[in-house]
Image 1 (cartoon, rainbow, N blue to C red):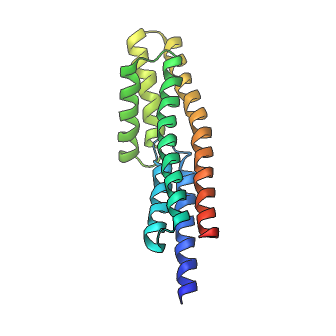
Image 2 (cartoon, rainbow, N blue to C red):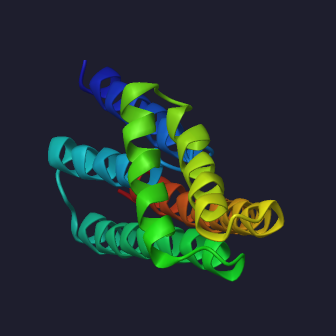
Image 3 (cartoon, rainbow, N blue to C red):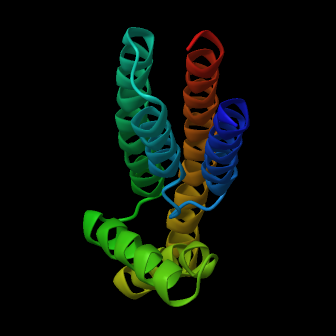
Length: 165
């Protein structure tokens, strides 16, 4: 029974980790945090060995890095495209609200729409609004690659934890 339970806990944790990893495709979905919670849950249920503590600390650092990188790259892309800081902040809020109201894709639509519309109102120039929109989209693309890489590292560290346990 114990072997079956260990296998079940590992399988459930892996499933949640994969949800987090593939959830990184949705910019507003907190996939990195979901993956961290899965690792925390795994440690809480199976116990934290010395190796588990070390790997969980590394997973935690990667989670923080992933969240910071995500916000910096998306904002930098929009800013590089000419968006104001106020527009970036409103777009971030629109993305959160859009995700809550129309999950899971409301945020993907709301944030870029907010950037485009606010910059169009600000400049009254379709070309400048489009550049800000493109900047946000480019930032999201770079951010996704970085977050996905961090997610792969987090999953790999957890896999080592399970394997060497």
